[in-house]
Image (cartoon, rainbow, N blue to C red; front, side):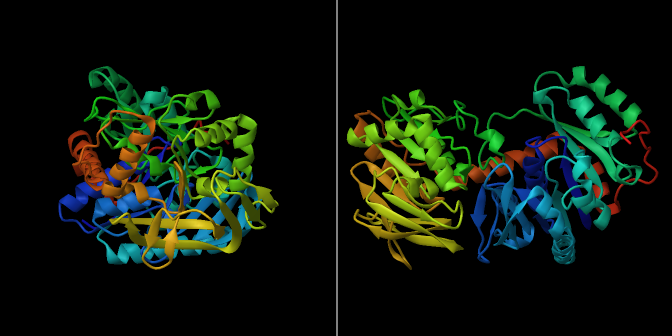
Length: 505
């Protein structure tokens, strides 16, 4: 088997990322040389690669599914939204410029060459490349500039399967409509469908799938059941719903739970940092967006932000800033990560991201930050209280002065992060995935809040991530027509697929 396949979706968060990860894991377990590829991603959840760039976190998970280290090759174009109208354009792992929707059109030709070159190189190196689309191919208003959906499929002659989320309702209409609005040339590459997150008796769905095949001439290649256990490395911002729990934590090892509130900033980035806390038995993590939800929690996490000054202002107008100040005064734990860490300081000078100049921080840490035009992108290792730790950094802001004790010691750069009472901060993403450090922090939180909580020593975030990848592969093997998918990879889309004539013209 040698070839490539594109997984598109009826909507964002339809299941493209997890289906690609599952297919990659399944093939890798069978000994196939396989790599993931997402031509263009729009996400503020990113990771730093070994080759010194940043890519979408979903592509890092997909690389892990393949048994590979994350690389900028797997996600050559990344858009990081900083507002409703502008995004930072990251190409081959490096920030290039800030673009609006209309400005982006000016970059499409050379970006198309970047994408085509990276995909061709991967196809030469690996037997199979599983590509992930972006959003939905039915966004026909964006077709002229499309790099990741039918634009990629047409350029590289990729067969396409379309996945739809039945949990939202209307999946049959979504699948039909996605094909119907496409041009005849694009429709020719749509080879089949996958239904995701199904609950109940599949027999009740089968008449609808038969009618869908009659209407479109395309088969449904599988119905994937809803799986409660899938939640690590959520790609889409839709997964950070206020008041929604993160994960499904096991019962506590001690007598009481620890309750964690992660502040759902408007421009939250690397929201997946808190997932490591949710892996711990007895730790309940929820996203919150208004101050009353912080009243009784044991730890507040202020995560990263793609728009630090704007989100700092939101903390004040929402009333959350006042709650954080009261918590700090009462000796109750707060953890700031990256942009959240910067907000906890005394001053921020930003002529880069917001052009706001000097602004006051929350003043809960004795810290001054200045933004530089060049972004820090690095993987990091170090120690914290004798514990070996690791993480990665993605930020423009630099600490130019601190009067607080360091949270840890970076092997290359020396003191990193801050501790003042029960207020902690760090620029490191992924730090909470260091299992021993996470357990030490939670033990300290429990002592500060008087909770009879005990950590479970065997918890491993890395093992949980691996288990979820294997679960994805199992779901693919058990519920998809793998033979048909392998034929698509090896031979491309079937010839002379019917065209749906009543599309939008």
